Image 1 (spheres, rainbow, N blue to C red):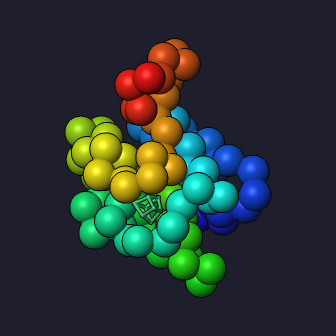
Image 2 (cartoon, rainbow, N blue to C red):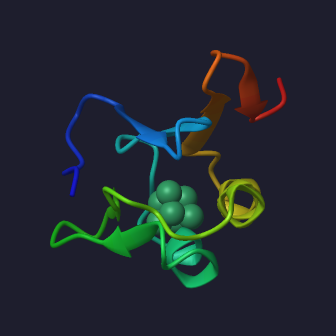
Length: 87
Ligand code: SF4
């Protein structure tokens, strides 16, 4: 489990994606957890944690990031290309 901190969290996901949660932007709405609870869970500080071994599909995780109302989830490919947000 990777704890949220003031520093963005980047983890490898199946060696194909990196998930970066911007805690300072996150408003703790829980949408990402509701849509991809195999990858995210709410921490004690009401900010999501990224599970060490996410078991959602890449598509499910990207869809959860797309649904974040404040774009607090960034996703990069394993090679460093930004997958979300698109700009
Ligand atoms: S959807 Fe976005 S704002 Fe809501 S808990 Fe997840 S990261 Fe935070």
